[in-house]
Structures are given as C-alpha cells and as structure tokens.
Amino acid sequence: MAYRLLLLVVPASLWLAACATDGAAAGQSSAANTGTASPTDVPAASSASGGRQARPAPREAAPNSTPHVRGFNRWLADFRREAAARGVAAGTLANAFDSAELIPRVIELDNRQPEFNRAIWDYLDTAVSQTRVTHGREKYAAHKDVAATTRDRYGVPGTIITAIWGMESNYGANYGNYETLDALATLGYDGRRESFAKEQLYAALKILANGDIPRDRMEGSWAGAMGNTQFIPTSFVAYAVDADGDGRRDIWDSIPDTMASTANYLAENGWRAGETWGRKVRLPAGFDYGMADGNTEKTSAQWQAMGVSAIDERGLPELRDAGIIAPAGASGPAFMTGHNFRTILRYNNAVSYALGVALLSDRIAGEPGIQADWPRDQATLTNSDTRALQRDLNRLGYGAGTPDGILGPNTKNAVRAFQRDHGLAADGFVTQDLAARVSSASN
Ligand SMILES: [Ca+2]
Image (cartoon, rainbow, N blue to C red; front, side):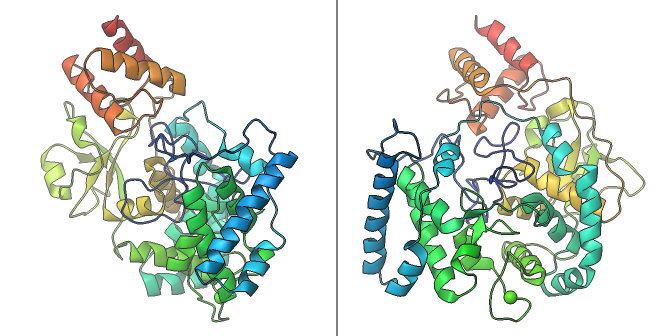
C-alpha cells in the first residue's frame, strides 16, 4: 500500500516506511486528496480523521486474550450473516472464514501511534539506497522483456514499474506474510477501521470466488495491502490484470501480472506515455515558495520566464503543466514535476513516496544520483512538538486548526502566513528552528 502518503514533510496520514517492515509494507497511505482509491489506500494509524467507530471493544484486554477471541468470533459471525444476506455464496464464506483467526499483532499495529515524523531525506536514504538501486537494475534486466511488453501496452516505462515494485515490496522480497482475510477481519473487529475493513473483505471475497489466488496465498501487510504491488482488495478488483494468460490475476507469484497490474493502475489514472515525471531544478532568489505546492501548474517555459533554471545541460523538462515542489523548503532541493508525478501520487499520496519512485526509476535507468542538498542539520518535530506549534500558531491568530500533532494543510498554511509576516521564505516547512521562533513570538 502504498503506502501510503507518508509523514513529516508528508501528509500526516501515512506511515513513512520506506521499506517493508513488520508487515507494514512500503508506503501505507491514505489517498485523502484524490478521488479514487489508492492501491495502498489504507487509513493511516495517525490519521486525525480516522473514523473510529463507537463500539464496546474490550481494549483493556491484551490482544491475545480470550475476551478478544470471543469478540472476534462474534464480529465474524455477524459479518458472515451480513455477507450471506448480500448474496455471497456459502462455499465462498466457508472457504474464507471457517479457518479465520484473530491476529493479535494486527491489533497492536493498528493502535500504534507513531511519535516521530521522519525527515524526507532519511526516508529517501532508504527508499533509494544503493542496495535498492542495484537490486532494481538486476530485476529490470532480468525482466526486461516483460517490462518492454508492459510498456508497449500501457505506456508506462519499465523503470517506473520496477521502482514501484521496489518501493512497495522490495521487489517481492517482503510484501508481508499476513493472511489478508485474517488481517482484515481482525481490523474489522478492532473497530478503528471497521468500514474500511468490511469494504475490503467484500472485495477479497470476490477475489477468492474468482479463483485468482488460494485463500492461504492471499497474503500481504497487516493493513490489507497484498502482494508485489501492495494492492488493497478493492484496487485489485479494479486494476489487477492477468497478463500471462493463465486466467488468474496473480500479483504474488507472476511477474507479468505484477508489472501489468501496476502499469494498468497508472494508465487508468492518467499516465502519459512518453512524458517525464520531472527533474531537479534551481529556483531563483526571492522565489515565492507559496507556489511550490506541486499544484500551481505552468508550462516549463513560463517557469523559466520566472527564473526557474536547469541544473545541467539537459535543460528543463518539457512539460505543459508542471508544478514545483520543494519538499524540505527553501533550504532544500527543488523539483519541477509534471502530470506523471501527480499520477504516481494516485498510487500513494505522499510526496516523499512519489519522489522515491521517481528518483529510484531514474537510477534504475542508469542515471547518476542527484546531488540533493537536504538540510540534514534540521531536526523534525515529534507529534507533541507539532501540537505545541499548532497551539502557538493559534494563539497568534494563524488558524492552524485543532492541535492534533499532524502537519496537515491548515498547519502548513498557518506556517506560511507566519513566515510571510516575519520576513521568512514562506515555504511552510516546519523545523525546530521555526517552531522555536513561533514559540517565542507567542509568549
Ligand atoms: Ca495470470
């Protein structure tokens, strides 16, 4: 799942796991800003709008305790009755749920509240590590024919597909070993994401009934993102493709199906064949960082006329609707990003994730690593630091919204307004220095 938008610097609604760890594969995210479901469109652990359901879950009990098992069995019995009433075949329900088990670890992970926001440079160090680049080049070379066939059919470069494969599941080495039906049933019972879990369970039942994958091979992250592509079941139903012709859509063991499914997702979300994602650029002195939001769209020539310049002899990318992003603010690198970058965000709505895919793809294609002048000396804020910052901004009248510890759009806009009023570059980038400055102004 893409996981995934990710923290910090990235919308708070995601976990910033650059590599699949402990079942939380690559970018688990919420596609909150997009109209369609992301393959990794999993409600984030720290989401403020998590939609917690009011239900009498026995939260005092340890996850593996008997009360939990009894509650899980009751929830599952209710769900089976509901599904049967909706017309799901008895055989499918028996296949899916006769052996279903509560997964205590899923409850633990579902209730985990990350306290630290990871800096984007730390995220990218992992996402585009030399090891991942090397493995990506090996995988791309090993599957070059499949990648070429996929590119010809969907218009998406094999390097992009391979990079997403690397970001999502470390090229299939780690897509999570939680049985998806058990994980989703546990999430449904736990209640924080019950409506999400039920919608995904219905999609998973369709996959099972269709015979795409046996029940015990339908595996993925603890949050329901499955296989190489980390599709949640609804994304699988909408976008998975049988490319090798065996009649099954298999994103676990079939590389052709995996590549085609990823490419199909991007193509259906608007990928433009032959257009680059973007490139690192240089911004002029005095640039209005309020425009570096990725969504202020101009042609490359218009940006050039405003002083945006190339960093090397390749010049600026030719884009008709380019945005500018400066994910670490005025003291970090800037990138010109096009429509295809925004399409990667449909896979996982986090700038850090999309930049990871883009830069990894470039490296797999043989390009050298970028010289990214990240402000590595800047410490990011903990969630409690962020809540304090939000209270200070509110006290000063900047309207950061409810202090929730999440660096969302309201907080960033409040920071930009504060920066403008204090003669700072209005990049909305939050650092300990900025927080200290706001704090002293508010006291
Ligand atoms: Ca197949």
